[in-house]
Image (cartoon, rainbow, N blue to C red; front, side, top):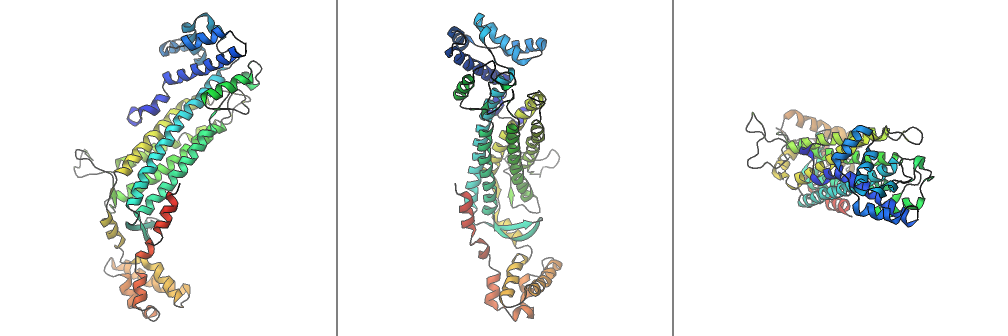
Length: 433
């Protein structure tokens, strides 16, 4: 984790203090249920609840010697609890603590990510409605295609993040399981009711079958979902980066009064947020392949997944949290230039109406291939003229066209309202809950 790209609430989930706090709660809940079952003295559970604590520096000191983080943690806790600590962790294995706590941390992080996605959705919805009817050019292959509206562009991204939210809700459910089933998951040394009790108290579910560890296909699904979220972030960021290019300049990141874009060129206003988001998306997606590879473990368990998760867990989630919040702010403050959009729309001399011209000719009785050829030959002349000619001018001089289409028909062809008549229907459908 890098402070520059971290927000305190998400970063705090992965700090040692929070991790060990969760470990202690898992151990305490388990011991309380053991006491209810008469497996350990009630005084042991009371002692752990009242006196249970730990010291991070002390844990690190002990781990340096014993090379085992859970043992180091339990030793530190014992120094606070005293004699009754001998009952702590009874019948449990390290994975019972680690994987159950891992689930708690992931659900805490998932709640923040879902909240972050909803911030992006809120910003997109507001700007979508604001620019529902703002005409702009739609592009395919980076080339002018046909008119659309800027609101419709944004509505498409809103729909993507709505899907992202739903996927994250499902991903949270997927990883919300714990295991307290002992060595190799047989419950040989611990009663199954202890697992059920701890799960209920933590607001989680019990894992159906844990081979000492929770199956890592659950975590793979979670990180894969994050990867898709990252791609949706990048998709919107790239759109903004393109629209801010000098030659396009239909939209632009907000540039504050004292902001500087370049150390060398005072005129620069660069899309730094969008570029940063593209980079953050790479970091988030970088966790997907390792998470998938963590699924294959030796027999009932090994720890090849452990070091991977210690890295990708904070990196992917802190980056996702940061990126989503930065994206929400970017959208809220995005500068949008409708006049430039219209200038760009008209830059190609009406070529954007070529399909409507072709379809009008087919409706007038000309075969589609012939209609395509007639319109295309005029369209190519418009390209060659570099703005000196318009498509309508050339079609009005073409006898193959004028023999079939009158002025009213041509007026109908070159009418932007044809492209906006269904925009409200599409946007309403996209924004519907």
